[in-house]
Length: 439
Image 1 (tube, rainbow, N blue to C red):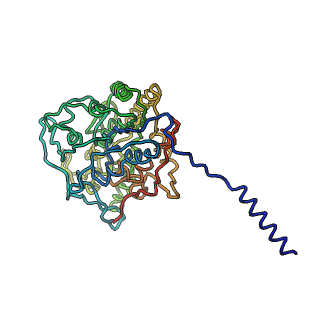
Image 2: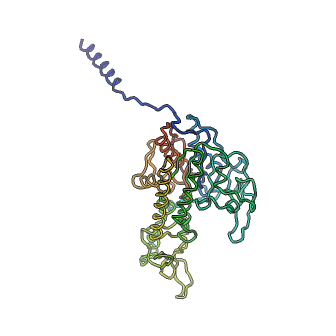
Image 3: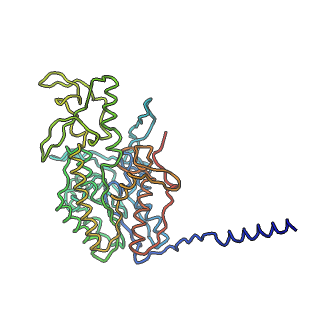
């Protein structure tokens, strides 16, 4: 009898657990108030799928717009065609490959130089050499062009100065005169994503403030207004991305002042500082000891530190005296960091304001990256962060994303779209996409 009662209690308990089991309601895919039948993406290298210091077929295939388009298929999204490099020239512009690690744990990267799509070099007087790539012919939905700034979208000669854009045009440099804005709007479309504007700050930052300038704030606002007005001229809906704080990436936070100084002090404990040529105000620079707020770029050749340099004061070690500071191009100093961040904040105020006026969805990549910096990110049980290589988000160039990083960005764009337009585009499975490929 006791055994029978025990069985009854067990069965009742199981029934109770079954009754309390939470229901998982997966929304039925829906387009909401948007029309995804012809989705196009506009933007720069991030949009094109650039990674590891180059544009190549494998990276193009996992661009965030292509991931978005794949998820849109269940809610009426049409075909999404990208200007892929051919399989015979799959390595495109060339890129970096991780081939090993040094004894101290630093990575060894090797340029991939086979099966490229380079068709020639065009010297442009007053500008420099432009690398030309094998022409692409056919329909285009992904208009991402590595290197393009918002500043370039109405500049008619730009098709002769950027080989990644030139390969998309029917004409050959130096005869092109089609502006990017006219090019991307030449064919009808129903929905768009826009992530232009990053390079208007990034170029200045990656050059250490020495090789580029920040786009004027008012000019940025005028061009962004023009861009969005034309993109929505026929009532199209879309999503835009704000500009992330570019100084947070591993390109600026892998080789630190502390690490460089520590390495020098192992050999010479008497060294107290490394010196940089830092922005004081306006265009005035002066040498001073570097601090943790000064950001050394990933491409800085650390072997230069301590090398003899001929000066009016005699031969002195590079980087270790105020007479031989580290070159500007290798350091985004604290004042330049602040200036870059100030401009990015202004650009983002413009983006949000214009998007709100036009009723567009917004992926706030600035807030998203800040949150990852502060708290990290866990996706499908995998911990991700902004560290170089091990963080999982950034590729070998320290600026552009891994396939996993692009999948995460795609999902953030999708979340913004769903929230704004009442759609229920399913999210991509981030686990299907890899981080940095190890040898």
